[in-house]
Length: 254
Image 1 (cartoon, rainbow, N blue to C red):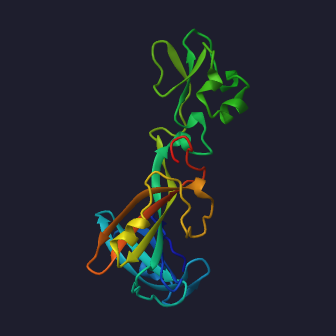
Image 2: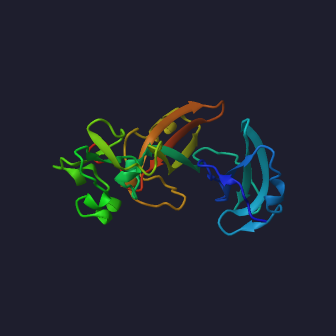
Image 3: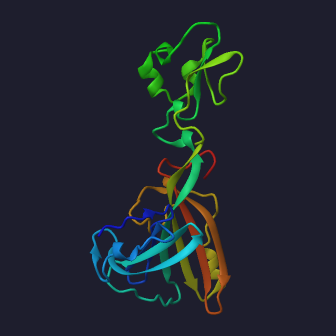
């Protein structure tokens, strides 16, 4: 039976182990009282994308729903990682980044702007938009009405001077959840100086050694965090890299 739960924006999380085994954790949201277990694959079942199913855990982060985490691995067995001096491990996480609607590649102005017409006794429709109905439906910039005095885009509604021609098509929606990949790198060293040597400069565009299939160049990856601490045996350095499909602004990030 197929999984019917809603896949969470933080899914999947990916961890690369020392033997190159990849462990995937997928998260699905279910109604609190829904019997989800019949949805799940059998232990050991193989998925072409995620590998072998190893089991699940369930939590209640909200009274209204249950979060179910399914674990897969590429080799059919999860191997505990025991680090040695100079070892490196990687893992990745896909999360939802809340950004304005305007950042969507499919953005249309009518999503979150009303089309208003001058209240002057003249009946207007979207056919009066410069270029006609087709231009109105394709408009993705406020400048489409630059210089107009009879029509305007406005997030507010009609008033004493303006009448509604076409209401926004996505009322109440100003943001959307954009999937974003973060890659984490952890290095283990006996000597503090060795750990400090691999610290990265935060705010620098750097291509991580493992991208979990996203690839790209240094233009697509930004170091957002890098630190080191002693765990009682090793000096451990952890660095985070954030992916941008469009590339990071070279004026802001070196």
